[in-house]
Length: 74
Image 1 (cartoon, rainbow, N blue to C red):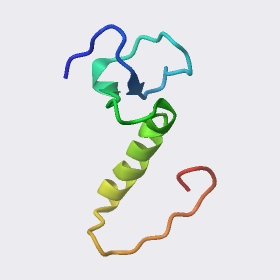
Image 2 (cartoon, rainbow, N blue to C red; image 1 turned 180 degrees about the horizontal axis):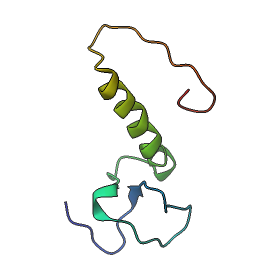
Image 3 (cartoon, rainbow, N blue to C red; image 1 turned 90 degrees about the horizontal axis):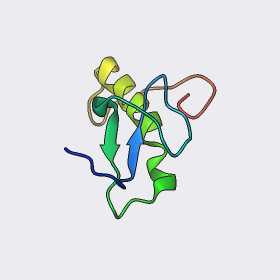
Image 4 (cartoon, rainbow, N blue to C red; image 1 turned 180 degrees about the vertical axis):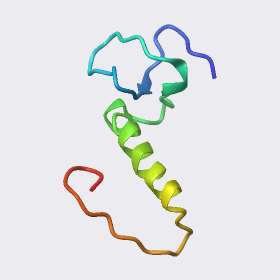
């Protein structure tokens, strides 16, 4: 997916900050759809970290797990 000047994007990585301008690899960015508020899109990276944990645990629909820890993810 291409990006255009003025697009609102959500991005992640180790060099991402809350700023208006930042240089990030395109594979760490996603265009925010027009029906998604930027304040909601800000949780994209946190959600992707949680989903990656589910993938690595090889959980299937209907299975249960426990997440232990502090913070937004656990």
